[in-house]
Image 1 (tube, helix red, strand yellow):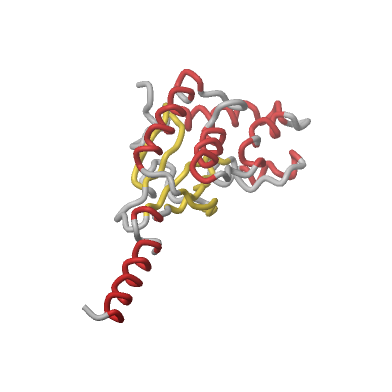
Image 2 (image 1 turned 90 degrees about the vertical axis):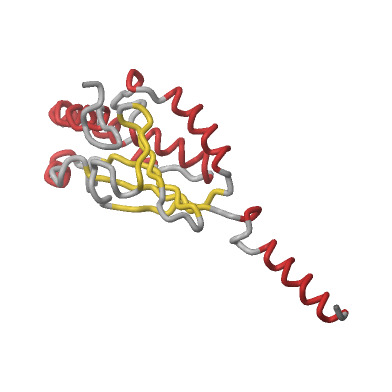
Length: 191
């Protein structure tokens, strides 16, 4: 091989090693999927509560691995649940936020998720302190350093602190109770 040919081959190898598709540099996109579990009713309560209220949020985290045919969606309901993105019982997300990228490999993500899952069990589900939005926030932060917006994470707490919060508390608890029974295939957890 001539000197020019060897240099070209070395340059191509170096370019391939530093390209986004090489295993060492592969990143995955991390998204927050946000669903309105009120079915649109939240907007009608907004004027009475004096809060900007687009929805009663349920959120999940989707990781889109480069080159993978399907993305995985992870959420907290009846424990930590996993599904192919877009197939959860919550339907289509009202909003999708791109939070960032992760370079964590699958094995590392599995270990982190197992640790997080030990703290997010059905027995630990709580409306204001440990719900789906808290889980999505923590999981996304572990993956890419960026969590869910604070308004989403603390929405239930903030709603209950309003003067009319006591009035909507039963409805909010009912909606959150539904998400607390959610599995990857439906709302029948614990039955």
